[in-house]
Length: 181
Image (cartoon, rainbow, N blue to C red; front, top):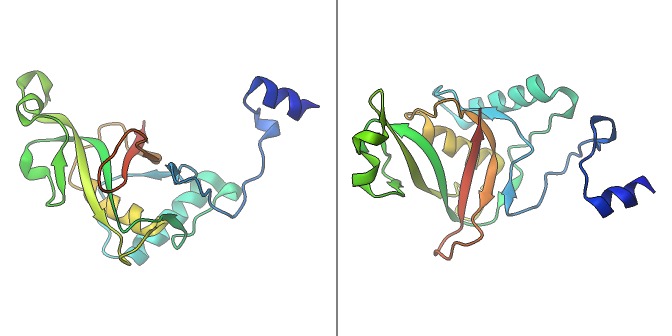
Protein backbone atom coordinates (compact mmCIF):
# COMPACT_ATOMS: atom_id res chain seq x y z
CA UNK A 1 0.00 0.00 0.00
CA UNK A 2 2.78 2.46 0.94
CA UNK A 3 4.59 1.78 -2.37
CA UNK A 4 1.36 2.51 -4.28
CA UNK A 5 0.87 5.83 -2.45
CA UNK A 6 4.54 6.77 -2.89
CA UNK A 7 4.36 6.12 -6.63
CA UNK A 8 1.02 7.90 -6.85
CA UNK A 9 2.38 11.04 -5.18
CA UNK A 10 5.97 10.58 -6.42
CA UNK A 11 7.43 11.30 -2.99
CA UNK A 12 11.04 10.67 -2.02
CA UNK A 13 11.99 7.78 0.24
CA UNK A 14 13.18 8.49 3.74
CA UNK A 15 16.51 7.16 4.99
CA UNK A 16 14.80 4.18 6.59
CA UNK A 17 13.12 3.20 3.34
CA UNK A 18 16.19 3.49 1.07
CA UNK A 19 16.80 0.36 -0.95
CA UNK A 20 20.09 -1.43 -0.52
CA UNK A 21 22.52 -0.79 -3.38
CA UNK A 22 23.09 -3.53 -5.88
CA UNK A 23 26.38 -4.54 -7.40
CA UNK A 24 25.03 -3.82 -10.87
CA UNK A 25 25.68 -0.35 -12.20
CA UNK A 26 22.73 1.60 -13.56
CA UNK A 27 22.38 1.20 -17.30
CA UNK A 28 20.86 4.65 -17.79
CA UNK A 29 22.82 6.10 -20.75
CA UNK A 30 21.55 9.61 -19.92
CA UNK A 31 22.80 9.68 -16.31
CA UNK A 32 26.24 8.08 -16.01
CA UNK A 33 28.19 7.27 -12.83
CA UNK A 34 25.90 9.28 -10.55
CA UNK A 35 26.24 6.45 -8.02
CA UNK A 36 29.92 7.03 -7.28
CA UNK A 37 31.66 9.68 -5.23
CA UNK A 38 34.92 11.40 -6.12
CA UNK A 39 36.77 14.62 -5.37
CA UNK A 40 38.95 16.12 -8.08
CA UNK A 41 42.02 17.27 -6.17
CA UNK A 42 44.64 18.09 -8.83
CA UNK A 43 46.72 15.11 -7.76
CA UNK A 44 48.74 13.55 -10.59
CA UNK A 45 48.22 9.83 -11.15
CA UNK A 46 50.97 8.01 -12.99
CA UNK A 47 48.84 5.07 -14.05
CA UNK A 48 45.27 3.87 -14.37
CA UNK A 49 46.09 1.15 -11.84
CA UNK A 50 47.04 3.74 -9.20
CA UNK A 51 43.94 5.80 -10.01
CA UNK A 52 41.69 2.72 -9.91
CA UNK A 53 43.01 1.84 -6.44
CA UNK A 54 42.50 5.40 -5.23
CA UNK A 55 38.95 5.74 -6.53
CA UNK A 56 38.06 2.33 -5.07
CA UNK A 57 39.48 3.35 -1.68
CA UNK A 58 37.59 6.66 -1.83
CA UNK A 59 34.29 4.82 -2.44
CA UNK A 60 34.89 2.65 0.65
CA UNK A 61 35.98 5.60 2.80
CA UNK A 62 32.90 7.67 1.98
CA UNK A 63 30.15 5.17 1.24
CA UNK A 64 31.31 2.39 3.60
CA UNK A 65 29.24 -0.78 3.03
CA UNK A 66 27.23 0.87 0.23
CA UNK A 67 30.37 1.41 -1.85
CA UNK A 68 30.47 -0.02 -5.33
CA UNK A 69 33.25 0.51 -7.83
CA UNK A 70 34.20 -1.65 -10.76
CA UNK A 71 36.37 0.28 -13.17
CA UNK A 72 35.70 -2.30 -15.90
CA UNK A 73 31.96 -1.54 -15.99
CA UNK A 74 30.88 -0.32 -19.44
CA UNK A 75 29.24 3.08 -18.91
CA UNK A 76 29.08 4.73 -22.36
CA UNK A 77 28.78 2.70 -25.54
CA UNK A 78 30.43 5.12 -27.97
CA UNK A 79 34.00 5.38 -29.30
CA UNK A 80 34.11 9.18 -28.86
CA UNK A 81 32.23 11.67 -26.70
CA UNK A 82 32.31 15.30 -25.69
CA UNK A 83 32.25 16.29 -22.03
CA UNK A 84 31.30 19.87 -21.13
CA UNK A 85 32.37 21.16 -17.74
CA UNK A 86 32.97 24.40 -15.87
CA UNK A 87 36.36 25.51 -14.60
CA UNK A 88 38.43 28.58 -13.80
CA UNK A 89 41.42 29.22 -16.09
CA UNK A 90 44.01 31.97 -16.41
CA UNK A 91 44.07 31.90 -20.21
CA UNK A 92 43.84 29.78 -23.34
CA UNK A 93 47.14 28.10 -22.44
CA UNK A 94 45.24 26.21 -19.71
CA UNK A 95 43.21 24.35 -22.34
CA UNK A 96 44.44 20.94 -23.47
CA UNK A 97 44.72 20.07 -27.17
CA UNK A 98 41.37 18.24 -27.15
CA UNK A 99 39.49 21.13 -25.49
CA UNK A 100 37.74 24.26 -26.65
CA UNK A 101 35.78 27.04 -25.02
CA UNK A 102 32.01 26.88 -25.39
CA UNK A 103 31.61 30.63 -24.97
CA UNK A 104 32.91 33.51 -27.09
CA UNK A 105 36.55 34.17 -26.24
CA UNK A 106 35.96 37.93 -26.02
CA UNK A 107 33.20 37.49 -23.46
CA UNK A 108 35.10 34.89 -21.44
CA UNK A 109 38.20 37.00 -20.92
CA UNK A 110 36.31 40.20 -20.16
CA UNK A 111 37.50 41.89 -16.96
CA UNK A 112 33.98 41.56 -15.52
CA UNK A 113 34.44 37.77 -15.64
CA UNK A 114 37.83 37.87 -13.89
CA UNK A 115 38.43 36.97 -10.26
CA UNK A 116 41.96 36.89 -8.80
CA UNK A 117 43.46 36.31 -12.25
CA UNK A 118 41.06 33.47 -13.15
CA UNK A 119 38.18 33.42 -15.61
CA UNK A 120 35.16 31.15 -15.23
CA UNK A 121 34.58 29.21 -18.44
CA UNK A 122 32.65 26.31 -19.87
CA UNK A 123 34.91 23.87 -21.68
CA UNK A 124 34.21 21.02 -24.07
CA UNK A 125 36.67 18.12 -24.10
CA UNK A 126 36.58 15.47 -26.83
CA UNK A 127 37.49 12.07 -25.43
CA UNK A 128 38.36 8.86 -27.26
CA UNK A 129 37.60 5.50 -25.64
CA UNK A 130 40.84 3.76 -24.73
CA UNK A 131 39.65 0.52 -26.34
CA UNK A 132 38.37 2.34 -29.44
CA UNK A 133 34.72 1.35 -28.97
CA UNK A 134 33.29 2.21 -25.52
CA UNK A 135 34.10 3.86 -22.21
CA UNK A 136 34.56 1.93 -19.00
CA UNK A 137 34.02 3.65 -15.66
CA UNK A 138 37.77 3.77 -15.09
CA UNK A 139 38.55 5.02 -18.60
CA UNK A 140 36.21 8.02 -18.44
CA UNK A 141 37.06 8.95 -14.84
CA UNK A 142 40.82 8.68 -15.47
CA UNK A 143 40.58 10.81 -18.60
CA UNK A 144 38.51 13.48 -16.83
CA UNK A 145 40.90 13.51 -13.86
CA UNK A 146 43.64 14.40 -16.34
CA UNK A 147 41.47 16.97 -18.15
CA UNK A 148 40.82 18.98 -14.99
CA UNK A 149 44.21 18.44 -13.32
CA UNK A 150 45.60 21.78 -14.49
CA UNK A 151 42.44 23.80 -13.87
CA UNK A 152 40.81 25.36 -10.85
CA UNK A 153 37.36 24.01 -10.08
CA UNK A 154 36.71 26.38 -7.19
CA UNK A 155 34.62 24.71 -4.53
CA UNK A 156 32.91 22.46 -7.10
CA UNK A 157 35.35 19.55 -6.83
CA UNK A 158 32.88 16.79 -5.92
CA UNK A 159 31.89 14.63 -8.88
CA UNK A 160 28.14 13.96 -9.17
CA UNK A 161 27.92 12.24 -12.55
CA UNK A 162 27.69 12.81 -16.29
CA UNK A 163 24.35 13.82 -17.80
CA UNK A 164 23.74 13.41 -21.49
CA UNK A 165 22.56 16.56 -23.30
CA UNK A 166 19.07 15.81 -24.60
CA UNK A 167 18.78 18.73 -27.02
CA UNK A 168 22.15 18.21 -28.74
CA UNK A 169 22.30 17.00 -32.35
CA UNK A 170 26.06 16.93 -32.86
CA UNK A 171 27.96 14.10 -34.50
CA UNK A 172 29.07 12.56 -31.18
CA UNK A 173 27.27 12.29 -27.80
CA UNK A 174 27.63 15.30 -25.48
CA UNK A 175 27.63 14.89 -21.71
CA UNK A 176 27.80 17.51 -18.97
CA UNK A 177 30.03 16.70 -16.02
CA UNK A 178 28.17 17.66 -12.86
CA UNK A 179 30.26 18.72 -9.88
CA UNK A 180 29.09 20.12 -6.58
CA UNK A 181 30.54 21.64 -3.46
